[in-house]
Length: 408
Image 1 (cartoon, rainbow, N blue to C red):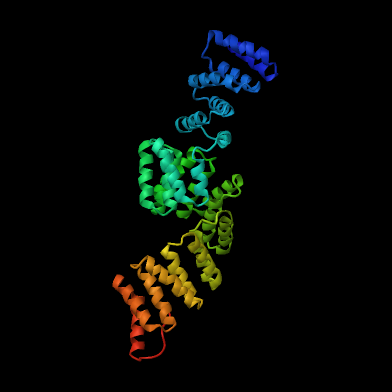
Image 2 (cartoon, rainbow, N blue to C red; image 1 turned 120 degrees about the vertical axis):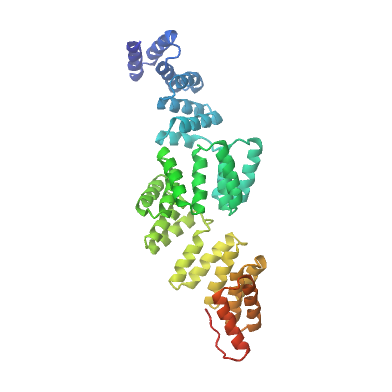
Protein backbone atom coordinates (compact mmCIF):
# COMPACT_ATOMS: atom_id res chain seq x y z
CA UNK A 1 0.00 0.00 0.00
CA UNK A 2 2.92 2.34 0.71
CA UNK A 3 4.27 1.71 -2.79
CA UNK A 4 0.87 2.48 -4.30
CA UNK A 5 0.67 5.75 -2.38
CA UNK A 6 4.15 6.73 -3.53
CA UNK A 7 3.21 6.03 -7.14
CA UNK A 8 0.09 8.14 -6.76
CA UNK A 9 2.07 11.03 -5.26
CA UNK A 10 4.64 10.81 -8.10
CA UNK A 11 1.87 11.09 -10.71
CA UNK A 12 0.33 13.94 -8.69
CA UNK A 13 3.59 15.88 -8.54
CA UNK A 14 4.18 15.31 -12.25
CA UNK A 15 0.80 16.80 -13.06
CA UNK A 16 -0.60 13.48 -14.20
CA UNK A 17 -3.81 13.99 -12.28
CA UNK A 18 -6.09 11.28 -13.74
CA UNK A 19 -3.48 8.62 -12.99
CA UNK A 20 -2.97 9.98 -9.48
CA UNK A 21 -6.72 10.03 -8.83
CA UNK A 22 -7.09 6.45 -10.03
CA UNK A 23 -4.39 5.25 -7.63
CA UNK A 24 -5.73 7.25 -4.65
CA UNK A 25 -9.18 5.72 -5.23
CA UNK A 26 -7.64 2.27 -5.48
CA UNK A 27 -6.16 2.77 -2.02
CA UNK A 28 -9.52 3.87 -0.62
CA UNK A 29 -11.24 0.77 -1.97
CA UNK A 30 -9.32 -1.32 0.56
CA UNK A 31 -8.66 1.40 3.19
CA UNK A 32 -11.54 3.92 3.00
CA UNK A 33 -10.18 5.91 5.98
CA UNK A 34 -6.64 6.23 4.65
CA UNK A 35 -5.81 9.85 5.67
CA UNK A 36 -3.22 10.66 3.00
CA UNK A 37 -5.23 9.19 0.12
CA UNK A 38 -8.36 11.07 1.28
CA UNK A 39 -6.45 14.31 1.72
CA UNK A 40 -4.73 14.09 -1.65
CA UNK A 41 -7.97 13.29 -3.45
CA UNK A 42 -9.33 16.46 -1.86
CA UNK A 43 -6.34 18.41 -3.12
CA UNK A 44 -7.01 17.11 -6.65
CA UNK A 45 -10.61 18.26 -6.42
CA UNK A 46 -9.53 21.76 -5.32
CA UNK A 47 -7.04 21.95 -8.21
CA UNK A 48 -9.94 21.20 -10.57
CA UNK A 49 -11.99 24.02 -8.90
CA UNK A 50 -14.29 21.53 -7.22
CA UNK A 51 -13.73 22.49 -3.59
CA UNK A 52 -17.21 21.28 -2.67
CA UNK A 53 -16.25 17.75 -3.74
CA UNK A 54 -13.02 18.01 -1.74
CA UNK A 55 -14.76 18.65 1.59
CA UNK A 56 -15.72 15.07 2.54
CA UNK A 57 -12.22 13.86 1.71
CA UNK A 58 -10.55 16.57 3.82
CA UNK A 59 -13.00 16.03 6.67
CA UNK A 60 -12.36 12.29 6.78
CA UNK A 61 -8.58 12.79 6.57
CA UNK A 62 -8.71 15.23 9.49
CA UNK A 63 -10.93 13.01 11.61
CA UNK A 64 -8.56 10.09 10.98
CA UNK A 65 -5.40 12.07 11.78
CA UNK A 66 -6.06 15.39 13.57
CA UNK A 67 -2.37 15.80 14.38
CA UNK A 68 -1.46 16.57 10.77
CA UNK A 69 -1.35 20.36 10.34
CA UNK A 70 -1.85 20.28 6.57
CA UNK A 71 -5.14 18.41 6.96
CA UNK A 72 -6.49 21.29 9.05
CA UNK A 73 -5.26 23.88 6.58
CA UNK A 74 -6.68 22.10 3.52
CA UNK A 75 -10.09 21.59 5.15
CA UNK A 76 -10.34 25.20 6.33
CA UNK A 77 -9.24 26.49 2.93
CA UNK A 78 -11.89 24.40 1.16
CA UNK A 79 -14.59 25.60 3.58
CA UNK A 80 -13.62 29.20 2.83
CA UNK A 81 -13.62 28.54 -0.92
CA UNK A 82 -17.17 27.17 -0.61
CA UNK A 83 -18.15 30.17 1.56
CA UNK A 84 -18.95 28.06 4.61
CA UNK A 85 -17.48 30.75 6.79
CA UNK A 86 -19.07 29.86 10.12
CA UNK A 87 -17.89 26.25 9.88
CA UNK A 88 -14.46 27.36 8.69
CA UNK A 89 -14.18 29.67 11.68
CA UNK A 90 -15.27 26.92 14.06
CA UNK A 91 -12.73 24.46 12.62
CA UNK A 92 -10.00 27.09 12.75
CA UNK A 93 -10.75 27.88 16.40
CA UNK A 94 -10.86 24.18 17.25
CA UNK A 95 -7.48 23.68 15.59
CA UNK A 96 -5.96 26.60 17.46
CA UNK A 97 -7.33 25.74 20.86
CA UNK A 98 -7.15 21.94 20.82
CA UNK A 99 -4.22 21.17 18.53
CA UNK A 100 -2.02 24.28 18.72
CA UNK A 101 -2.64 25.30 15.12
CA UNK A 102 -0.63 28.46 14.39
CA UNK A 103 1.69 30.19 11.96
CA UNK A 104 1.60 32.47 8.94
CA UNK A 105 -0.61 30.20 6.84
CA UNK A 106 -3.11 29.96 9.68
CA UNK A 107 -3.17 33.74 9.99
CA UNK A 108 -3.56 34.11 6.23
CA UNK A 109 -6.59 31.80 6.26
CA UNK A 110 -8.06 33.63 9.22
CA UNK A 111 -7.70 36.89 7.31
CA UNK A 112 -9.88 35.46 4.53
CA UNK A 113 -12.77 34.89 6.92
CA UNK A 114 -15.37 37.61 7.28
CA UNK A 115 -15.02 38.72 10.88
CA UNK A 116 -17.84 37.31 12.99
CA UNK A 117 -17.74 40.41 15.16
CA UNK A 118 -16.84 42.68 12.25
CA UNK A 119 -19.43 45.34 12.98
CA UNK A 120 -18.49 45.52 16.65
CA UNK A 121 -14.79 45.67 15.79
CA UNK A 122 -15.30 48.44 13.24
CA UNK A 123 -17.26 50.44 15.81
CA UNK A 124 -14.57 49.87 18.44
CA UNK A 125 -11.78 50.80 16.06
CA UNK A 126 -13.50 54.10 15.30
CA UNK A 127 -13.95 54.86 19.00
CA UNK A 128 -17.73 54.26 19.02
CA UNK A 129 -17.63 52.05 22.09
CA UNK A 130 -21.25 52.43 23.17
CA UNK A 131 -22.49 51.36 19.75
CA UNK A 132 -20.15 48.37 19.82
CA UNK A 133 -21.47 47.46 23.26
CA UNK A 134 -25.06 47.58 22.00
CA UNK A 135 -24.19 45.38 19.00
CA UNK A 136 -22.49 42.79 21.19
CA UNK A 137 -25.34 42.74 23.71
CA UNK A 138 -27.80 42.08 20.89
CA UNK A 139 -25.55 39.33 19.55
CA UNK A 140 -25.37 37.71 22.98
CA UNK A 141 -29.14 37.57 23.25
CA UNK A 142 -29.05 35.06 20.39
CA UNK A 143 -25.68 33.52 21.35
CA UNK A 144 -25.53 33.48 25.17
CA UNK A 145 -22.65 30.97 25.26
CA UNK A 146 -20.33 32.98 22.98
CA UNK A 147 -17.26 33.51 25.17
CA UNK A 148 -15.47 35.62 22.56
CA UNK A 149 -18.43 37.99 22.29
CA UNK A 150 -18.24 38.51 26.07
CA UNK A 151 -14.49 39.13 25.70
CA UNK A 152 -15.12 41.78 23.03
CA UNK A 153 -17.78 43.27 25.29
CA UNK A 154 -15.29 43.45 28.17
CA UNK A 155 -12.77 45.29 26.00
CA UNK A 156 -15.32 47.87 24.86
CA UNK A 157 -16.54 48.46 28.41
CA UNK A 158 -12.94 48.95 29.50
CA UNK A 159 -12.20 51.41 26.69
CA UNK A 160 -15.35 53.29 27.67
CA UNK A 161 -14.07 53.46 31.28
CA UNK A 162 -16.79 51.14 32.59
CA UNK A 163 -14.44 48.85 34.46
CA UNK A 164 -17.05 47.15 36.65
CA UNK A 165 -19.08 46.13 33.61
CA UNK A 166 -15.88 45.06 31.86
CA UNK A 167 -15.04 42.60 34.63
CA UNK A 168 -18.58 41.24 34.69
CA UNK A 169 -18.39 40.54 30.95
CA UNK A 170 -14.93 39.04 31.23
CA UNK A 171 -15.97 36.74 34.08
CA UNK A 172 -18.80 35.47 31.89
CA UNK A 173 -16.28 34.77 29.12
CA UNK A 174 -13.94 32.98 31.52
CA UNK A 175 -16.78 30.82 32.82
CA UNK A 176 -17.66 29.70 29.29
CA UNK A 177 -14.22 29.25 27.73
CA UNK A 178 -11.17 30.21 29.81
CA UNK A 179 -8.84 28.77 27.13
CA UNK A 180 -9.90 31.16 24.38
CA UNK A 181 -6.97 33.30 23.23
CA UNK A 182 -9.25 36.32 22.89
CA UNK A 183 -10.63 35.85 26.40
CA UNK A 184 -7.11 35.55 27.81
CA UNK A 185 -5.91 38.61 25.89
CA UNK A 186 -8.64 40.79 27.36
CA UNK A 187 -8.09 39.26 30.79
CA UNK A 188 -4.47 40.43 30.58
CA UNK A 189 -5.59 43.90 29.48
CA UNK A 190 -7.94 44.31 32.43
CA UNK A 191 -5.34 43.05 34.89
CA UNK A 192 -2.83 45.55 33.53
CA UNK A 193 -5.39 48.32 33.97
CA UNK A 194 -5.57 47.32 37.64
CA UNK A 195 -1.75 47.43 37.80
CA UNK A 196 -1.59 43.68 38.44
CA UNK A 197 1.43 43.56 36.20
CA UNK A 198 2.90 40.18 37.10
CA UNK A 199 -0.45 38.40 36.59
CA UNK A 200 -1.07 40.21 33.34
CA UNK A 201 2.44 39.47 32.09
CA UNK A 202 2.06 35.75 32.81
CA UNK A 203 -1.15 35.50 30.79
CA UNK A 204 0.23 37.60 27.94
CA UNK A 205 3.38 35.49 27.79
CA UNK A 206 1.25 32.37 27.56
CA UNK A 207 -0.85 33.55 24.63
CA UNK A 208 2.24 34.88 22.87
CA UNK A 209 3.92 31.51 23.28
CA UNK A 210 0.78 29.80 21.96
CA UNK A 211 0.76 31.92 18.79
CA UNK A 212 3.71 34.27 18.42
CA UNK A 213 2.78 35.17 14.82
CA UNK A 214 -0.45 36.88 15.86
CA UNK A 215 0.21 40.64 15.91
CA UNK A 216 -2.35 41.29 18.65
CA UNK A 217 -0.68 38.70 20.87
CA UNK A 218 2.62 40.42 20.15
CA UNK A 219 1.28 43.83 21.12
CA UNK A 220 -0.51 42.74 24.28
CA UNK A 221 2.69 41.06 25.45
CA UNK A 222 4.64 44.20 24.51
CA UNK A 223 2.32 46.29 26.68
CA UNK A 224 2.94 43.99 29.65
CA UNK A 225 6.70 44.07 29.08
CA UNK A 226 6.62 47.87 28.96
CA UNK A 227 4.69 48.02 32.22
CA UNK A 228 7.31 45.71 33.73
CA UNK A 229 10.15 47.94 32.40
CA UNK A 230 11.37 45.25 30.00
CA UNK A 231 11.83 47.89 27.35
CA UNK A 232 14.08 46.30 24.74
CA UNK A 233 11.98 43.15 24.16
CA UNK A 234 8.86 45.32 24.12
CA UNK A 235 10.43 47.56 21.47
CA UNK A 236 11.29 44.52 19.36
CA UNK A 237 7.74 43.18 19.55
CA UNK A 238 6.21 46.54 18.60
CA UNK A 239 8.50 46.83 15.60
CA UNK A 240 7.68 43.24 14.63
CA UNK A 241 3.95 43.99 14.78
CA UNK A 242 4.41 47.13 12.68
CA UNK A 243 6.14 45.15 9.95
CA UNK A 244 2.94 43.15 9.52
CA UNK A 245 0.49 45.98 10.22
CA UNK A 246 2.17 49.31 9.33
CA UNK A 247 -0.79 51.42 10.51
CA UNK A 248 -1.16 49.73 13.89
CA UNK A 249 -1.89 52.81 16.01
CA UNK A 250 -1.63 50.98 19.34
CA UNK A 251 1.80 49.65 18.37
CA UNK A 252 3.03 53.21 17.81
CA UNK A 253 1.50 54.21 21.15
CA UNK A 254 3.21 51.42 23.10
CA UNK A 255 6.48 52.03 21.28
CA UNK A 256 6.09 55.66 22.34
CA UNK A 257 5.68 54.53 25.95
CA UNK A 258 8.89 52.52 25.63
CA UNK A 259 10.79 55.62 24.49
CA UNK A 260 9.12 57.75 27.17
CA UNK A 261 10.22 55.34 29.90
CA UNK A 262 13.70 55.21 28.39
CA UNK A 263 13.94 58.99 28.70
CA UNK A 264 13.68 59.87 24.99
CA UNK A 265 10.56 61.98 25.24
CA UNK A 266 11.03 63.67 21.86
CA UNK A 267 10.95 60.31 20.09
CA UNK A 268 7.99 59.30 22.24
CA UNK A 269 6.09 62.43 21.24
CA UNK A 270 6.58 61.68 17.54
CA UNK A 271 5.29 58.14 18.03
CA UNK A 272 2.28 59.32 20.03
CA UNK A 273 1.42 61.80 17.31
CA UNK A 274 1.79 59.08 14.68
CA UNK A 275 -0.64 56.91 16.65
CA UNK A 276 -3.12 59.78 16.90
CA UNK A 277 -2.86 60.51 13.17
CA UNK A 278 -4.22 56.98 12.65
CA UNK A 279 -6.64 56.87 15.58
CA UNK A 280 -7.34 60.35 16.95
CA UNK A 281 -9.68 58.84 19.58
CA UNK A 282 -6.77 57.26 21.55
CA UNK A 283 -7.64 59.78 24.22
CA UNK A 284 -5.20 58.62 26.89
CA UNK A 285 -2.30 59.94 24.76
CA UNK A 286 -3.42 63.57 24.82
CA UNK A 287 -2.69 64.16 28.55
CA UNK A 288 0.80 62.68 28.09
CA UNK A 289 1.42 65.01 25.16
CA UNK A 290 0.06 67.89 27.22
CA UNK A 291 2.43 67.00 30.06
CA UNK A 292 5.37 66.96 27.63
CA UNK A 293 4.54 70.41 26.25
CA UNK A 294 3.84 71.81 29.71
CA UNK A 295 7.22 70.55 30.90
CA UNK A 296 8.81 72.31 27.94
CA UNK A 297 6.98 75.58 28.68
CA UNK A 298 4.85 75.31 25.55
CA UNK A 299 1.49 76.10 27.11
CA UNK A 300 -0.42 76.66 23.83
CA UNK A 301 0.53 73.17 22.62
CA UNK A 302 -0.33 71.64 26.00
CA UNK A 303 -3.69 73.41 26.00
CA UNK A 304 -4.40 72.20 22.46
CA UNK A 305 -3.71 68.59 23.47
CA UNK A 306 -6.05 68.74 26.45
CA UNK A 307 -8.74 70.41 24.38
CA UNK A 308 -8.57 67.46 21.99
CA UNK A 309 -9.03 65.06 24.91
CA UNK A 310 -11.97 67.12 26.17
CA UNK A 311 -13.47 67.16 22.67
CA UNK A 312 -13.60 63.36 22.67
CA UNK A 313 -14.69 63.10 26.31
CA UNK A 314 -16.80 66.21 26.98
CA UNK A 315 -17.96 64.93 30.37
CA UNK A 316 -14.54 63.90 31.67
CA UNK A 317 -13.94 66.21 34.63
CA UNK A 318 -10.23 65.42 34.88
CA UNK A 319 -9.68 66.94 31.43
CA UNK A 320 -11.52 70.08 32.50
CA UNK A 321 -9.61 70.40 35.76
CA UNK A 322 -6.22 70.12 34.07
CA UNK A 323 -7.25 72.28 31.11
CA UNK A 324 -8.51 75.00 33.42
CA UNK A 325 -5.19 75.09 35.24
CA UNK A 326 -3.19 75.34 32.01
CA UNK A 327 -5.47 78.10 30.75
CA UNK A 328 -4.90 79.95 34.04
CA UNK A 329 -1.14 79.60 33.72
CA UNK A 330 -1.41 81.00 30.17
CA UNK A 331 -3.46 83.97 31.47
CA UNK A 332 -6.58 82.84 29.60
CA UNK A 333 -8.52 83.40 32.77
CA UNK A 334 -12.01 83.91 31.35
CA UNK A 335 -11.82 80.64 29.44
CA UNK A 336 -10.32 78.89 32.47
CA UNK A 337 -13.24 80.01 34.63
CA UNK A 338 -15.77 78.81 32.03
CA UNK A 339 -14.13 75.37 31.86
CA UNK A 340 -13.80 75.00 35.62
CA UNK A 341 -17.35 76.14 36.30
CA UNK A 342 -18.52 73.35 33.99
CA UNK A 343 -16.31 70.96 35.92
CA UNK A 344 -17.81 71.82 39.30
CA UNK A 345 -21.31 71.61 37.85
CA UNK A 346 -20.61 68.10 36.61
CA UNK A 347 -18.68 67.03 39.70
CA UNK A 348 -19.62 69.19 42.70
CA UNK A 349 -17.66 66.88 45.02
CA UNK A 350 -14.38 67.18 43.09
CA UNK A 351 -12.06 69.07 45.42
CA UNK A 352 -9.43 69.75 42.76
CA UNK A 353 -12.00 71.34 40.44
CA UNK A 354 -13.01 73.74 43.21
CA UNK A 355 -9.33 74.32 44.06
CA UNK A 356 -8.41 75.27 40.51
CA UNK A 357 -11.48 77.45 40.19
CA UNK A 358 -10.53 79.22 43.41
CA UNK A 359 -6.98 79.71 42.15
CA UNK A 360 -8.00 81.35 38.88
CA UNK A 361 -10.55 83.54 40.69
CA UNK A 362 -7.83 84.53 43.13
CA UNK A 363 -5.57 85.38 40.18
CA UNK A 364 -8.05 87.95 38.87
CA UNK A 365 -8.75 89.29 42.38
CA UNK A 366 -12.27 87.88 42.61
CA UNK A 367 -11.56 87.29 46.28
CA UNK A 368 -15.04 86.58 47.60
CA UNK A 369 -15.78 84.10 44.82
CA UNK A 370 -12.39 82.49 45.28
CA UNK A 371 -13.03 82.12 48.99
CA UNK A 372 -16.32 80.34 48.29
CA UNK A 373 -14.58 77.96 45.89
CA UNK A 374 -11.86 77.18 48.44
CA UNK A 375 -14.45 76.62 51.16
CA UNK A 376 -16.21 74.13 48.87
CA UNK A 377 -12.92 72.32 48.32
CA UNK A 378 -12.03 72.31 52.02
CA UNK A 379 -15.41 70.87 52.91
CA UNK A 380 -14.60 67.91 50.64
CA UNK A 381 -10.90 67.60 51.43
CA UNK A 382 -10.12 69.45 54.70
CA UNK A 383 -6.47 68.40 54.87
CA UNK A 384 -5.44 69.79 51.48
CA UNK A 385 -2.36 71.83 52.36
CA UNK A 386 -2.24 73.93 49.19
CA UNK A 387 -5.85 74.89 49.65
CA UNK A 388 -5.23 75.98 53.22
CA UNK A 389 -2.31 78.07 52.02
CA UNK A 390 -4.39 79.83 49.37
CA UNK A 391 -7.30 80.24 51.75
CA UNK A 392 -4.96 81.81 54.28
CA UNK A 393 -3.77 84.31 51.70
CA UNK A 394 -7.34 85.28 50.93
CA UNK A 395 -7.99 85.84 54.61
CA UNK A 396 -4.97 88.14 54.67
CA UNK A 397 -6.32 90.07 51.70
CA UNK A 398 -9.69 90.46 53.28
CA UNK A 399 -8.10 91.82 56.45
CA UNK A 400 -5.86 94.19 54.45
CA UNK A 401 -2.73 92.22 55.44
CA UNK A 402 -1.20 92.87 52.07
CA UNK A 403 -2.16 93.16 48.49
CA UNK A 404 -0.07 90.30 47.02
CA UNK A 405 -1.87 87.06 46.19
CA UNK A 406 0.19 83.89 46.14
CA UNK A 407 -0.43 82.21 42.77
CA UNK A 408 0.58 78.56 42.98
